[in-house]
Length: 346
Image 1: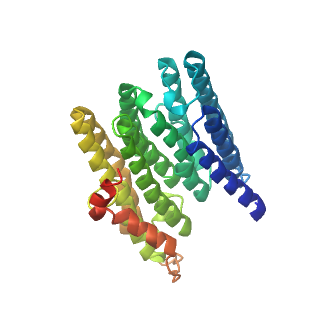
Image 2: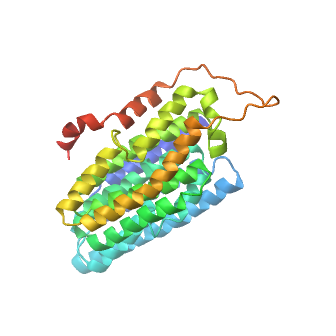
Image 3: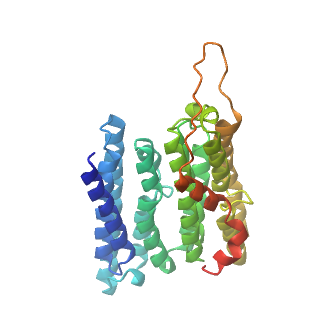
């Protein structure tokens, strides 16, 4: 892909995201989502591999269906109430259809099946965009319409997402698929709290995006996409492998890392809302995803390749760690002590 084409697609992504997050009218929000979808498709299919073409096709079909449902719910609400404003969504059927459309856009269970397949067929940098930037516009729409949505339905979808994200990631060997199921599991945490404390959902999304960006950029630097190749990285890049270890533990939500902060706040808020059983269930289900994070960290840092006489030794790479990864790793692991400062913004 030429640099000019890449520039056009990247600026279209930024434009589409900006239009959606800054709009009050359903039509402009829908137009921004469409620009986003059309801009990311060439980035998914740029390798011309059959799997990449398949991923782009699956992504296009699911996003087109979700956009059609979103437009349909907006039109139904406008037909019954005369309002095209995003925050004035009051018709119950329109709210239900919108919940389905946004769940399909985000990859929230039970509309999650497309996401692991699309991520597996994309390059690591495009997979990073799909996991973070492409989820920002639907997440802002979820934030803006949160008072109108059904909290019971969202709670059930959230618990199902966390359960499926954990279960289905257990036996995976492809790192991109593991990170896709991790994303589905994290979306469950965001969806369960959006009706009660929408700002916590956004905080969780920001921190998740930060930590996921660190993981993807590290994997892209060490050129790793399978567990078997991850096992040989310690010999080549011990510093990056250590960073990956810390970031994955943060993504798992273990204290004293940054990833523990949103989970702690969400459990606290759910308990205040007399939803202790839901908080307990989602906490226990997140232990499933903890297993595959620990499996990744074990492969990255503790497993060493066999040292046989005819084994080709990996050269130790003496290049310095990219400064962007170093900064991202620091923020991905060390923000918990300043949580009182973060809480003043929520």
